[in-house]
Length: 338
Image 1 (cartoon, rainbow, N blue to C red):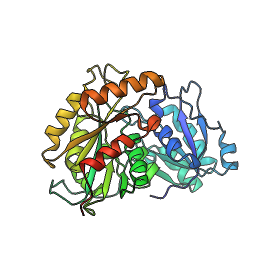
Image 2 (cartoon, helix red, strand yellow):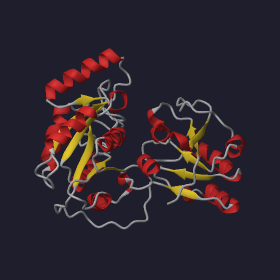
Image 3 (cartoon, one colour):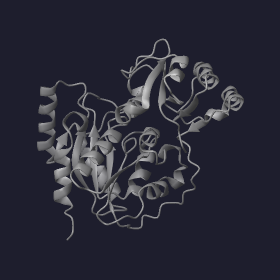
């Protein structure tokens, strides 16, 4: 799948920042590709890049409009269809990470055909996956896991890729969600894989490698989330991680979109080890990544210090304070063999 850059980011009329996390992720990690944004009335998200009309976007060189939103069920609201058709009429390709295929909507399919434009459904892979085998394979793997969905697992994995490479590690980010695929250019949206093949798809994403190579695998959902635990468990078994980092958003009391209470970090560590031992008996935590965006710096540092002492693990906000402590822990726990 070759998606033409640069992008115009479509935010629709989403109600909050989290509902546009795909767009934010691309803008944060590939800012040079994001020329502008287009928003509908009532949109509560703002990437901090220029608001452009379709004509302005084309004039500035945009080649693809990215539907940079997420929602429960991955549906495309009917009142967004006309805007997507208009983008195709203006000469832009359209890419989406939603579950619904763009081409399944007659108006969009016809506009793409009439204008000779491309439709990219990033969440849908043409790859055929085997069932997972759980056979031990060479190489090192780290998985980011969460107390909830949308808690920073992708950002933590990307920050670790950057931090580990700076320290001389052979490390690669492995995308398991639509935003990660947009950012890395490779991967599989695991939540769109048929359940029997989830662990096999992860084995494909992070295959056998050099013994000292690290695959940093983007986590999804949470083992405690009633909506997404099935995906999280299949991902854990397929990743066969040697190490994991727990990702947490400290201001939540319930998990996103449901009434179930947020699990504790200790609960997540215990269940991840219990379930992860099926494919890697040596699985262990190496750090805690906390999204402290809602806290001032003093509050954030106090919280991270307390969590680090409570769990005897390096705790940081990967975006705000970096990942040096976690990289130190990885180096100590997994020394390079002579």
